[in-house]
Image 1 (tube, rainbow, N blue to C red):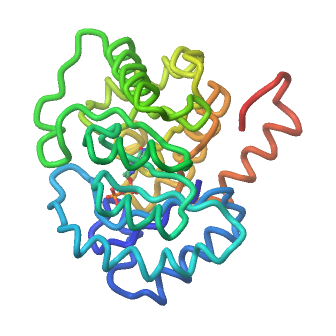
Image 2 (image 1 turned 90 degrees about the vertical axis):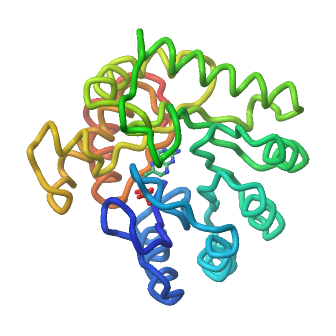
Length: 262
Ligand code: HH2
């Protein structure tokens, strides 16, 4: 899954701001690099990011989404706002990627009436405050239980199980230690019966491990993506599509022994 941030303020600095032309070119580069899914997001959810209005999010998203939907690639929209979901689904996006795990009742009703895929991500708190003091007794079991609960809520509302993906939400209300524990527990998360999406690309956890600033986290991101795939992740949400694909190709050709998802 190639990340396309239609934002002026994304944490990794890859956001393309207000230029539709630049955004479409960036999306196209992700597509050409071999992304199997494009994930368009028009609000940064980095810790402390300001909430953007529905109007602003739609103004950033829709012109780019219209262009990208004409290409031969599934398009995911990264939003937790029902109005943005509604517009994206009307235009024909294939997937909703909701960092709030579809907490909004209106969002649940909308998605259940459509046939899109749905990524349910775990987040403790909200982007505004989630990194203040994240707290868990046992992060792996609590996150997994929260994900299963969100999946059950969706299924009870009529969303078929095979439309769902689960995501532990690296960096969303988690310390570096929580993130590392969750990463080590990915095989457990992946054994819960739903495909797992992992998004660690360029995140601060990798900065903490390597001591590298944002601009130098590509190798660490590729290593983490590979480890996630080896642990059973089905979808890797990444900034560096070509490099990640190369790593996966080497793994498939040389290192990969069994049945896998990626
Ligand atoms: N991470 C980000 C945004 N959306 N969605 C899922 N499912 N999983 C993630 O880990 C995830 C996500 C944050 O990354 P990015 O979009 O690059 O930055 P920003 O939110 O600052 O635009």
